Amino acid sequence: MQSKNFIVIHGWMINELNLKGNDLLVYALIYGFSQTDNQYYTGSLDYLAEWCNSTKQGIIKNLENLLSKDLIVKEQLGYNKYRWSTKFNTMVNKVDHDGKQSLPNNIARKHLVVDKSTTKANKESKEEIVQDFLNLYHTICKSLPKVKSITDKRKKAITKLMNTYTLNDAKEVFTKAEESSFLTGKNDRGWKADIDFILREDKFISILEGKYDCKKKSVSAEGSLKLDRSVDKNRLREEKTSGKVEKF
Image 1 (tube, rainbow, N blue to C red):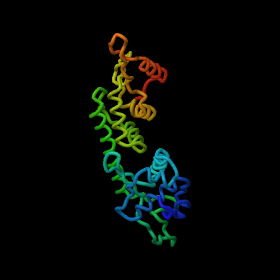
Image 2 (cartoon, helix red, strand yellow):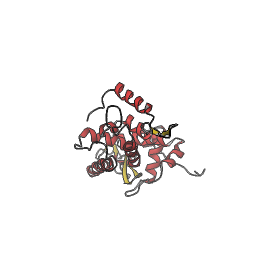
Image 3 (tube, rainbow, N blue to C red):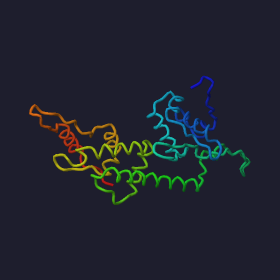
Image 4 (cartoon, rainbow, N blue to C red):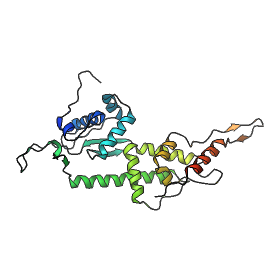
Protein backbone atom coordinates (compact mmCIF):
# COMPACT_ATOMS: atom_id res chain seq x y z
CA MET A 1 0.00 0.00 0.00
CA GLN A 2 1.33 3.44 -0.92
CA SER A 3 1.27 6.24 1.63
CA LYS A 4 -0.59 8.54 -0.79
CA ASN A 5 -3.54 6.11 -1.18
CA PHE A 6 -6.77 6.99 0.61
CA ILE A 7 -10.36 5.88 1.31
CA VAL A 8 -13.38 8.17 0.97
CA ILE A 9 -15.91 7.72 3.78
CA HIS A 10 -19.19 9.58 3.26
CA GLY A 11 -21.19 10.85 6.20
CA TRP A 12 -24.31 8.92 5.14
CA MET A 13 -22.37 5.66 5.54
CA ILE A 14 -22.16 6.44 9.26
CA ASN A 15 -25.36 8.43 9.82
CA GLU A 16 -27.77 6.44 7.66
CA LEU A 17 -26.21 2.96 7.40
CA ASN A 18 -24.91 3.01 11.00
CA LEU A 19 -21.65 1.45 9.89
CA LYS A 20 -18.51 1.56 12.00
CA GLY A 21 -15.13 -0.09 12.38
CA ASN A 22 -13.94 -2.43 9.66
CA ASP A 23 -17.50 -2.91 8.37
CA LEU A 24 -17.40 0.78 7.46
CA LEU A 25 -13.95 0.56 5.86
CA VAL A 26 -14.83 -2.52 3.80
CA TYR A 27 -18.09 -0.93 2.62
CA ALA A 28 -16.30 2.31 1.69
CA LEU A 29 -13.65 0.40 -0.27
CA ILE A 30 -16.23 -1.60 -2.23
CA TYR A 31 -18.29 1.54 -2.79
CA GLY A 32 -15.22 3.29 -4.18
CA PHE A 33 -14.96 0.65 -6.91
CA SER A 34 -18.69 0.41 -7.67
CA GLN A 35 -20.19 3.90 -7.64
CA THR A 36 -21.56 3.53 -11.17
CA ASP A 37 -23.42 0.73 -12.91
CA ASN A 38 -21.43 -2.25 -14.20
CA GLN A 39 -18.44 -1.47 -11.99
CA TYR A 40 -17.37 -3.87 -9.24
CA TYR A 41 -14.68 -4.62 -6.71
CA THR A 42 -12.86 -7.74 -7.94
CA GLY A 43 -9.75 -7.47 -5.78
CA SER A 44 -8.52 -9.91 -3.18
CA LEU A 45 -9.37 -10.37 0.48
CA ASP A 46 -5.71 -9.61 1.20
CA TYR A 47 -6.15 -6.12 -0.25
CA LEU A 48 -9.12 -5.42 2.02
CA ALA A 49 -7.28 -6.93 5.00
CA GLU A 50 -4.28 -4.67 4.35
CA TRP A 51 -6.46 -1.55 4.35
CA CYS A 52 -8.28 -2.60 7.52
CA ASN A 53 -5.15 -3.86 9.27
CA SER A 54 -7.03 -7.13 9.72
CA THR A 55 -6.90 -10.80 8.67
CA LYS A 56 -8.63 -12.61 5.82
CA GLN A 57 -10.95 -14.33 8.32
CA GLY A 58 -11.77 -10.94 9.83
CA ILE A 59 -12.59 -9.53 6.39
CA ILE A 60 -14.80 -12.55 5.60
CA LYS A 61 -16.75 -11.77 8.78
CA ASN A 62 -17.10 -8.10 7.74
CA LEU A 63 -18.38 -9.11 4.29
CA GLU A 64 -20.81 -11.53 5.92
CA ASN A 65 -22.11 -8.73 8.15
CA LEU A 66 -22.66 -6.43 5.16
CA LEU A 67 -24.38 -9.20 3.20
CA SER A 68 -26.71 -9.94 6.11
CA LYS A 69 -27.69 -6.25 6.17
CA ASP A 70 -28.32 -6.38 2.42
CA LEU A 71 -25.84 -3.55 1.81
CA ILE A 72 -23.59 -5.29 -0.72
CA VAL A 73 -23.98 -7.77 -3.55
CA LYS A 74 -21.77 -10.83 -4.01
CA GLU A 75 -21.55 -12.44 -7.45
CA GLN A 76 -19.54 -15.56 -8.23
CA LEU A 77 -17.46 -15.47 -11.41
CA GLY A 78 -15.84 -18.89 -10.98
CA TYR A 79 -14.22 -21.09 -8.37
CA ASN A 80 -12.90 -18.88 -5.58
CA LYS A 81 -13.45 -15.75 -7.69
CA TYR A 82 -16.06 -13.14 -6.82
CA ARG A 83 -16.99 -9.57 -7.57
CA TRP A 84 -18.58 -7.22 -5.08
CA SER A 85 -20.65 -4.06 -5.36
CA THR A 86 -22.74 -1.89 -3.07
CA LYS A 87 -26.44 -2.66 -3.13
CA PHE A 88 -27.33 0.40 -5.23
CA ASN A 89 -24.54 1.81 -7.36
CA THR A 90 -26.11 4.99 -8.73
CA MET A 91 -25.99 8.10 -6.55
CA VAL A 92 -29.44 9.71 -6.40
CA ASN A 93 -29.51 13.46 -5.97
CA LYS A 94 -33.13 14.35 -6.69
CA VAL A 95 -35.79 15.97 -4.55
CA ASP A 96 -38.67 13.75 -3.42
CA HIS A 97 -42.32 14.77 -3.11
CA ASP A 98 -41.80 16.14 0.41
CA GLY A 99 -39.17 18.54 -0.85
CA LYS A 100 -36.39 16.65 0.94
CA GLN A 101 -33.24 15.68 -0.83
CA SER A 102 -32.92 11.96 -1.51
CA LEU A 103 -30.03 10.30 0.23
CA PRO A 104 -27.17 8.64 -1.66
CA ASN A 105 -27.50 4.99 -2.65
CA ASN A 106 -31.32 5.23 -2.76
CA ILE A 107 -31.55 5.39 1.05
CA ALA A 108 -34.62 7.25 2.28
CA ARG A 109 -35.55 7.65 5.94
CA LYS A 110 -33.10 4.88 6.88
CA HIS A 111 -34.92 2.30 4.74
CA LEU A 112 -33.49 0.74 1.59
CA VAL A 113 -35.58 1.01 -1.56
CA VAL A 114 -35.33 -2.54 -2.92
CA ASP A 115 -34.98 -3.05 -6.67
CA LYS A 116 -37.10 -6.13 -7.43
CA SER A 117 -35.06 -7.03 -10.50
CA THR A 118 -31.91 -7.04 -8.36
CA THR A 119 -33.63 -9.20 -5.75
CA LYS A 120 -34.66 -11.70 -8.44
CA ALA A 121 -31.10 -11.84 -9.79
CA ASN A 122 -29.73 -12.44 -6.30
CA LYS A 123 -32.22 -15.28 -5.77
CA GLU A 124 -31.17 -16.91 -9.04
CA SER A 125 -27.52 -16.50 -8.07
CA LYS A 126 -28.16 -18.23 -4.71
CA GLU A 127 -29.91 -21.10 -6.49
CA GLU A 128 -26.86 -21.53 -8.74
CA ILE A 129 -24.51 -21.59 -5.76
CA VAL A 130 -26.63 -24.26 -4.05
CA GLN A 131 -26.65 -26.34 -7.21
CA ASP A 132 -22.87 -25.93 -7.74
CA PHE A 133 -22.30 -26.98 -4.11
CA LEU A 134 -24.40 -30.13 -4.49
CA ASN A 135 -22.88 -30.96 -7.88
CA LEU A 136 -19.44 -30.88 -6.26
CA TYR A 137 -20.67 -33.12 -3.44
CA HIS A 138 -22.06 -35.73 -5.84
CA THR A 139 -18.99 -35.58 -8.10
CA ILE A 140 -16.45 -36.06 -5.29
CA CYS A 141 -18.22 -37.88 -2.45
CA LYS A 142 -18.95 -41.14 -4.26
CA SER A 143 -18.87 -43.12 -1.00
CA LEU A 144 -21.39 -40.96 0.86
CA PRO A 145 -25.21 -40.99 0.57
CA LYS A 146 -26.61 -39.02 -2.36
CA VAL A 147 -28.83 -36.00 -1.78
CA LYS A 148 -32.35 -36.83 -2.92
CA SER A 149 -34.19 -33.82 -1.48
CA ILE A 150 -33.07 -30.18 -1.50
CA THR A 151 -35.07 -28.78 1.41
CA ASP A 152 -35.29 -25.10 2.31
CA LYS A 153 -33.26 -25.81 5.44
CA ARG A 154 -30.49 -27.38 3.38
CA LYS A 155 -30.54 -24.44 0.95
CA LYS A 156 -30.27 -22.03 3.86
CA ALA A 157 -27.36 -23.97 5.37
CA ILE A 158 -25.49 -24.07 2.04
CA THR A 159 -26.06 -20.36 1.43
CA LYS A 160 -24.82 -19.52 4.92
CA LEU A 161 -21.64 -21.57 4.41
CA MET A 162 -21.00 -20.02 0.99
CA ASN A 163 -21.31 -16.51 2.45
CA THR A 164 -18.22 -17.30 4.51
CA TYR A 165 -16.37 -19.95 2.52
CA THR A 166 -15.77 -20.58 -1.18
CA LEU A 167 -16.55 -23.44 -3.53
CA ASN A 168 -12.82 -24.20 -3.44
CA ASP A 169 -13.16 -24.68 0.33
CA ALA A 170 -16.17 -26.93 -0.27
CA LYS A 171 -14.19 -28.92 -2.84
CA GLU A 172 -11.41 -29.43 -0.29
CA VAL A 173 -13.92 -30.50 2.39
CA PHE A 174 -15.58 -33.01 0.02
CA THR A 175 -12.19 -34.42 -1.04
CA LYS A 176 -11.09 -34.83 2.58
CA ALA A 177 -14.42 -36.44 3.48
CA GLU A 178 -14.16 -38.92 0.60
CA GLU A 179 -10.58 -39.82 1.61
CA SER A 180 -11.47 -40.20 5.31
CA SER A 181 -11.81 -43.78 6.49
CA PHE A 182 -13.94 -42.72 9.44
CA LEU A 183 -16.38 -40.57 7.43
CA THR A 184 -16.85 -43.19 4.71
CA GLY A 185 -17.92 -45.96 7.07
CA LYS A 186 -14.65 -47.66 7.98
CA ASN A 187 -15.29 -47.35 11.68
CA ASP A 188 -16.52 -49.65 14.46
CA ARG A 189 -20.23 -49.15 13.70
CA GLY A 190 -20.17 -48.62 9.93
CA TRP A 191 -21.50 -45.06 10.29
CA LYS A 192 -21.13 -42.72 7.31
CA ALA A 193 -21.24 -38.95 7.09
CA ASP A 194 -23.92 -37.41 4.89
CA ILE A 195 -24.74 -33.95 3.53
CA ASP A 196 -26.48 -32.95 6.78
CA PHE A 197 -23.34 -33.75 8.75
CA ILE A 198 -21.14 -31.72 6.39
CA LEU A 199 -23.55 -28.76 6.42
CA ARG A 200 -23.05 -28.31 10.16
CA GLU A 201 -20.54 -25.47 10.23
CA ASP A 202 -18.55 -26.97 13.11
CA LYS A 203 -18.17 -30.23 11.17
CA PHE A 204 -17.41 -28.38 7.91
CA ILE A 205 -14.56 -26.57 9.69
CA SER A 206 -13.32 -29.76 11.38
CA ILE A 207 -13.12 -31.59 8.04
CA LEU A 208 -11.45 -28.59 6.38
CA GLU A 209 -8.85 -28.40 9.15
CA GLY A 210 -8.03 -32.10 8.80
CA LYS A 211 -9.60 -33.49 11.98
CA TYR A 212 -10.97 -36.51 10.09
CA ASP A 213 -7.91 -37.14 7.92
CA CYS A 214 -6.67 -40.73 7.93
CA LYS A 215 -3.85 -41.68 10.25
CA LYS A 216 -0.73 -42.62 8.31
CA LYS A 217 0.04 -46.32 8.08
CA SER A 218 3.00 -47.67 10.02
CA VAL A 219 5.13 -50.78 9.39
CA SER A 220 5.42 -53.32 12.22
CA ALA A 221 8.62 -55.18 13.17
CA GLU A 222 7.44 -58.15 11.07
CA GLY A 223 7.10 -55.88 8.08
CA SER A 224 3.30 -56.00 7.88
CA LEU A 225 1.21 -52.84 7.55
CA LYS A 226 -1.26 -51.94 10.28
CA LEU A 227 -3.56 -48.99 10.98
CA ASP A 228 -3.50 -47.08 14.20
CA ARG A 229 -7.22 -47.10 15.03
CA SER A 230 -6.96 -45.02 18.19
CA VAL A 231 -7.86 -41.84 16.27
CA ASP A 232 -11.02 -43.46 14.84
CA LYS A 233 -12.03 -44.65 18.30
CA ASN A 234 -11.65 -41.15 19.71
CA ARG A 235 -13.77 -39.76 16.88
CA LEU A 236 -16.42 -42.40 17.43
CA ARG A 237 -16.52 -41.59 21.13
CA GLU A 238 -16.93 -37.89 20.31
CA GLU A 239 -19.79 -38.56 17.86
CA LYS A 240 -21.61 -40.70 20.45
CA THR A 241 -21.34 -38.05 23.14
CA SER A 242 -22.43 -35.23 20.81
CA GLY A 243 -25.66 -37.02 19.91
CA LYS A 244 -27.30 -37.56 16.56
CA VAL A 245 -26.55 -35.36 13.59
CA GLU A 246 -29.24 -32.74 13.06
CA LYS A 247 -31.68 -33.78 10.33
CA PHE A 248 -32.81 -31.38 7.62
